[in-house]
Image 1 (cartoon, rainbow, N blue to C red):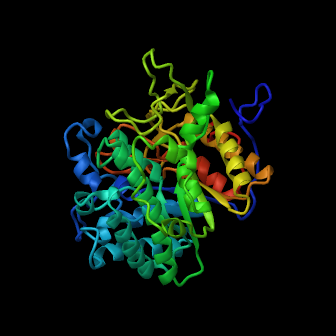
Image 2: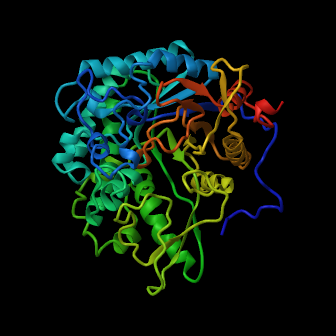
Image 3: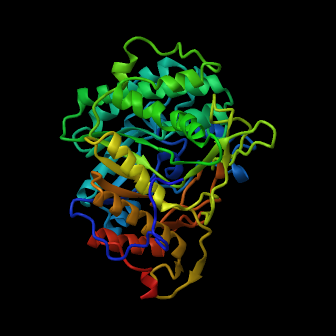
Length: 490
C-alpha cells in the first residue's frame, strides 16, 4: 500500500525535531469562509452566496453572510496572528469584492480592504501569501457558463492584473488557484460544492479552463508586479492506496484525474494521454485550443501542496454495491468522470470529525514523490489540519476565562510536522508549513458544524478563543522546534 515500510510502532510522533531557520511556519484561511460582509462596500454575489442560500445545499442552512466577520475585525485578527508569532499568513482575495460581476473596473473599496490587510501583515513582520481564487467565483460569470466557459479564464487574467497592480509591490508570494480539483470536480461533477452542477463533461471542461486561468493569471501578474516575489499554485494532490486485483489500474485512473491532469499541463506543458483516453466517452476535449498548453505551462517558484488524508481505491466488480467513500460529501453526482470502474473504500482509522483517516505517512510519501518527479521545484505545505469536536471548559487562568484542550488536533499537527521533517531529511526542498486553519470558519457544504481552527470562534458573540493548539503552534513558530506535548500538560 505505502511506498514506505514503517518500523513497528512508528507513529510519527517526533519530539524536539528542529526545522531550518528559514522554514516558514504560518496559517491559512479563505475569503468566503471568514470575511462576512457579503453585501457591503460594493461586493457582488459569488457562487457560494447563491449555493449557500439554496435550501438543502449546506447543512443547517448556514451561509457565509457573516462567517467570522473578519472584514470588520481585521485589526483584531492581525494582532492575533502577531501574538501567535506566525511567520506567514495565506489569505485569499474575493474576486466579487474586486469586480462585483467578474469583469469591468475595479471596486476600490475591495482593493483597499486587501491593501490594509497586506500592510497590517507587513507592519507585524508577517509574510503575506495571497491566493487569487479560493472558489468564490462571481455569480455573473457562472450565469454565463462559469468554468465551462473559456471567457471565465480570460476574465481571471484581467482580474489578476488588477489585483497584481494594486498589491504587487508588497505581496511575498502569489498563488493563482487553490485546489482546482475541488472547483472542477466537486463544483461541476458531484454537485457537493458551488455551483452544484452534476455534469461530467462540464467538470472536465472546468479542469481545462482552470488550468488555462492559472497560466493567464501568472502571465498577468508578471506583467504588473513590481516587487521581488514568488509565483505559485496550490493543489490538493491525492495519495491513493490501491487494494485487490487491479489495484495499480485503479490508482492509475484516479491519479490521472486527481493529480496528473493538473501537474502535467502546468509543469510539463501537456495533458496525460491516458487521461484523455479514459475520459473519451465523456468528452472529446475540443475545448483545448492550439497554444493553450504553452499558456498553461508557466514557470513556478514554489508548488503549494494541501494534504489531509489518504484515499483507498480498487476496481469495482460491477456486481456488488459500489463503494463511494472518497471523503467528500455525497450530493448525487460523481467527482470522478470516466472512472466508473473504480470504487472508493473507507480507509482504516483513526478519523477526524470530517471522517477522514489520519495517516501522516501519506504526507511524507506525497512530498517525496512530487520532489522526485520535479526535483527543481520547491514545495510548501499550504494546508494541513484537522476538524475535531472541540469542548470548551472553564479556565480562570486564561484571558477569555475558558479553554479548549484540543489534544487530538495537537497530536495531528505534531505527527504531520514530523512527516514534513522527515521529508526534509530525505532531501525534499520544503520551504514551509501552513496550518489549516487560523480560525474556525464556514466549512463549505458542512456549514459551521466542523471546526478546523487553532482559534475557536464563538459564532454567537464572534469572540476569538485561542485553543491549546494555538499556544502549541506559537511555541513551534517561536522556536522552530516541534513541542513535545500539549502545553497545558506541563
